[in-house]
Amino acid sequence: MRLTVLVDNATLTDRYFLAEPGLSIYIEDGETRVLFDTGYSGILVENARKMGIDLLRVGEIVLSHGHLDHTWGLDALLRLHTEAIIEGRERVEPTFVAHPDAFLTRSCDGVGEIGCHLSVEELFRHGKVLLTAAPLWLTENLVFLGEIERRFPFEPAPSGGYIYTPDGIRDDTVPDDTALACRTEEGLVIVTGCSHAGICSIVEQAREVCGEDRVADVIGGFHLLDPPAEQIEGILDYFAKVRPAALHPCHCTGLAAKIALAKVADVRETGVGLHLEYG
Image (cartoon, rainbow, N blue to C red; front, side, top):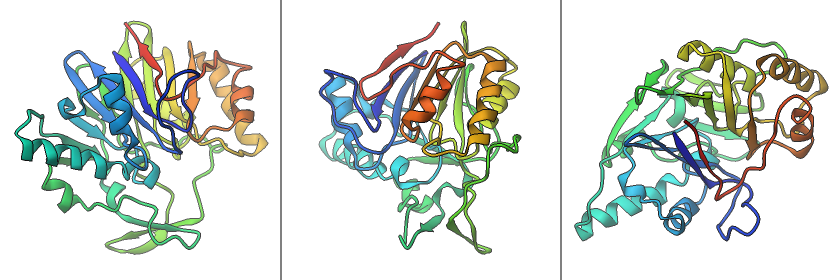
């Protein structure tokens, strides 16, 4: 398994890419190419081009959840595919994979739409759409974890936003938040978007779905910008028991949380341009 960070809040030192508050990670598992999230503005297209990554060859576009910093880059990706069709260039028709709630309208703090502004019907014009709340194996070793069971009381449910469902408006606890997990020789590699469902709940579900207790790495947003002390304490206790070989917290993970996590795990720098390979 190989992965490359295309979008993050920062770039690695002396790597001349674009950054923004968002996330996108390119993954290769054997011959399968997966794009996990698309960032906010579309800079993933330029960054991928500079890295020599052909996004037109990506078979699955997986969304961790519906928020704008993970889905609004879809516009640029769809333009890339549209231009390729018009110009007669080779491409793979993508399959979009997400939780069924990922395309619902969301609002927060007076902002009318903080969710994906593309509908499922619009995406169907550009490829296949596969919506599932259940785990879905993308390859023999790479799995979409589906809706995360929220297992730990120290990881509070998100609050403050609203989601507009066919049955009415309700508080948005981000039920669509999910992640990917890949079985490798070193253990599980878990790729998260924002971890609204709770980083420990995500890791525990990955271990359960994959039948593997060893964790080689967790990379992505941990949703720890200003967490309460009891949440950090619970997370540190959990990771001290799980003993991951490495952690790559980024995007929505604050400096204080990274320093705290470094007490119980090998926390490594993450940013646009990072390339990792696992056995």
